[in-house]
Length: 95
Image (tube, rainbow, N blue to C red; front, side, top):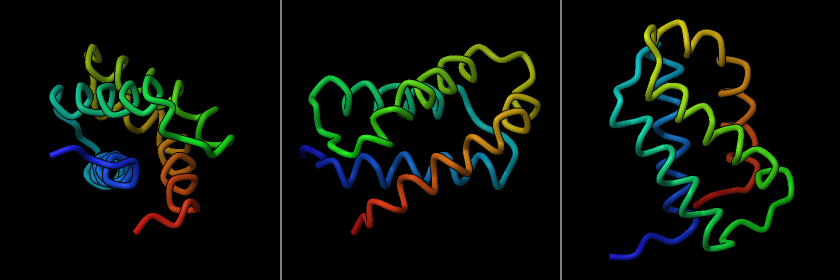
């Protein structure tokens, strides 16, 4: 089953929201974040300019989280970013 861009964005939003809410993230979640962003960027599936500018930031968040020694601190440090990313995704009116 191929996921469309709305499915990918919804999944990305859910992972980010859960990490921000729980204050913890698994390595597999960070790897998934990277895969989702890479997929969307590689296939030119995103047309929203604001989100296009944010995707590299989200990818770097995933990369840094994957290697973070202190995951809760990594999430706390990025809380404002995470909230702005979630807000940008929500503005796309994903169904």
